[in-house]
Image 1 (cartoon, rainbow, N blue to C red):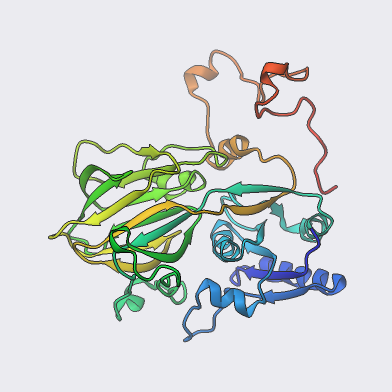
Image 2: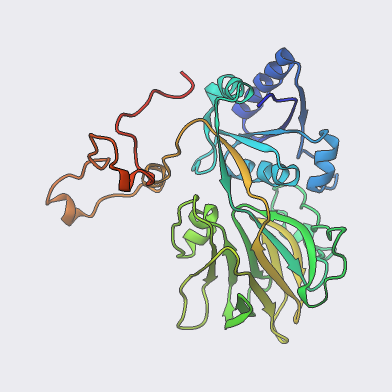
Length: 358
């Protein structure tokens, strides 16, 4: 695709990200492409909503993130609001979401501009709620921890300010997860959890989350949830430290919404999207989480080796007893093309191609 407008999301705390941003700006100037820094703020200023940032940036058609997975999540929030492409440059510690080594930024931008890339679609989450989300006045001081000002609560979508029993639609997007968690250290939250309109159970827990397959390797994984291929479509419900015997995750179909309602005598609960606090629920209030109508469109320079990355980034090791019995090859030993009945399967290529940018 011919790129006309680039939005740049930079992790300002990493010198290599700041230097890579200069490369992106220089490339944009060479190509006659408008390049705007977005999702930035000055000390003492309020954070802006995704739509305000997109409007300021002139509705970019490509978002470039320079940082780790956290920076990519910020860029994904912006890209989802404009159905823009997002390209993640890897400068982080884990790197499940980012794609391009920092030294190859200019080559990657050339590949996007010349339409030599693949577009990977990843499921997003959105929300409805019983009422607009709000943040108490003292929440900023309580939750900041030196990471900059909080994002504003999500706006109510203009087409649905009155939702009746369905709730009001919020202008909110999450690539990883939506989390409902306790605010008081001495009280768990008590929540009725509904899957596809049916009560699953009432939980007393530290937190309850709904994750996408992309988010299955993030907080959901840390809480004991399953690892799911990012190519799948599903909603993963996982309780965190529930005070009950049933502590397993539940994987729902993408058209099965998951609703979380605070019970009448529960304490307050914080609502976070992709790790960003966006509001507080009071007893009796609820949120409904469901698959967003449009997926995120992420730039990929070649086939994504998710399971190889899982083994590497999670530092998976083989069982000592298994290692004593022999070595396993890193790839299934395929030497010929797939037969017709297996041609539709996603398997490693018979011969690995060259690095796509060189």
